[in-house]
Image (cartoon, rainbow, N blue to C red; front, side, top):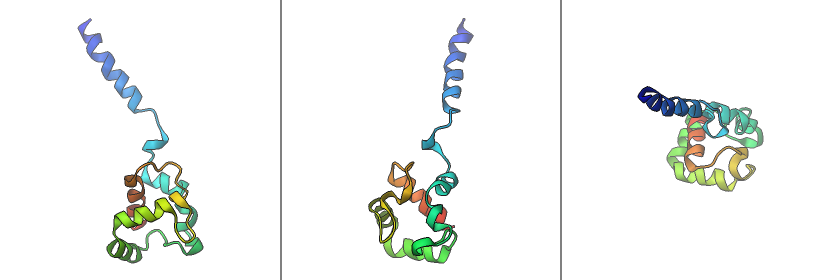
Length: 102
């Protein structure tokens, strides 16, 4: 009886954490579903993923908070949110920016 009382919450917790959700999608998957539309090809003059010197220059000159703000608000040719329907927090956007800069 004691064993079942201890084991049930553990198994329930494991089952719930293994359910896939969009909110815990990996950064690579999030990039592929949104940012890659423009940043993989440089469409609309978007900085390309992997152009580390350019991304590092942006991060140094503007800072991450300003870059995140510009994604949220939209830019010259970038829609607000950068097509990322799954991004909910500033951290989500910062992770994508870091991902693209490598």
